[in-house]
Amino acid sequence: MRFFDKYKICAKQNKSLLCIGLDNADFEFIKKIIDETHDLVCAYKPNSAFYEAGGAKGIETLKKVCMYIQKNYPEIPIILDAKRGDIGNTNEQYAKFAFEYLQVDAITLHPYQGLGALAPFEKYQDKGLIALVKTSNPESSELQDMKLENGKMVWEQVLEEVVKRDGGKGQWGVVVGATHPEEMKMARKMIGNMVVLVPGVGAQGAKVEDILNDETSNGLDMIINVGRSILQASDPRQAAKEVQLLTINYSAQKE
Ligand code: BMP
Image 1 (cartoon, rainbow, N blue to C red):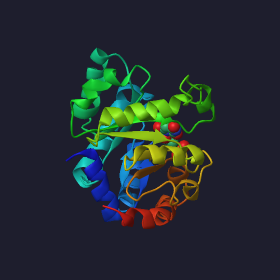
Image 2: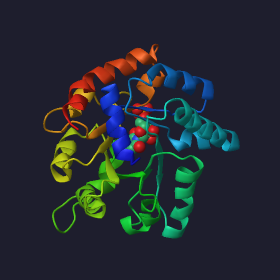
Image 3: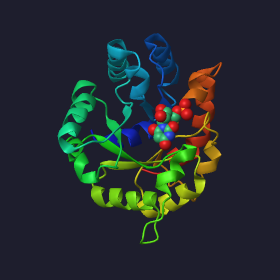
């Protein structure tokens, strides 16, 4: 099944736009988080860095986390947050790791080397490709907000290119940080129903209410990632439930 279809089914079923960031390479801890929250999420997003940091053992844990979700909660899509992007020949290997070894449903990608260079990822037609457009970190303006000769900012141009590249196929999505609610509104106008992966809620200071309003959401078009503020909560299920409840009206709205 195609990633964005799987996400929509899961979001409707669990009435949630919450994606939990599985950014911790302690398998037993992550297993517990998954078991406690599987009915509250629309996706899980392990960030590869937290696993790579542990060397071979970390990669093994990442594989174990993916297998655990795939075996016990196969309806929940997994987004590998690895922000890959290189020349085409190298991207083939990155794609193999994500889609053949880990068998995840989607991956985050850097568009800096050109969207054409990302074609090896597109060959896996059921997999979702999520391009960085306007990132949540405070430094994002350094390059992303630079004005081009045509008057657009770099991130707007990147967004347009991603929409063009997708051509209505529904394989591509974009990252826009929750810390940029104005840009979120602008982006929403430019992308129709394309799905936005939204990091920045919780530890980075943004609130779900900042971005989930009629101007920014059409319903099943956002994947709101929350990592630390759920993983480090004294009651992670309760923390997840609070975010899920805020997203419930939006996730129930649309096909
Ligand atoms: P947290 O909720 O703990 O801040 O986690 C955010 C997650 O989303 C991290 O894995 C981070 O690398 C990722 N991320 C982000 O914070 N901002 C972006 O613009 C893009 C990301 O993928």
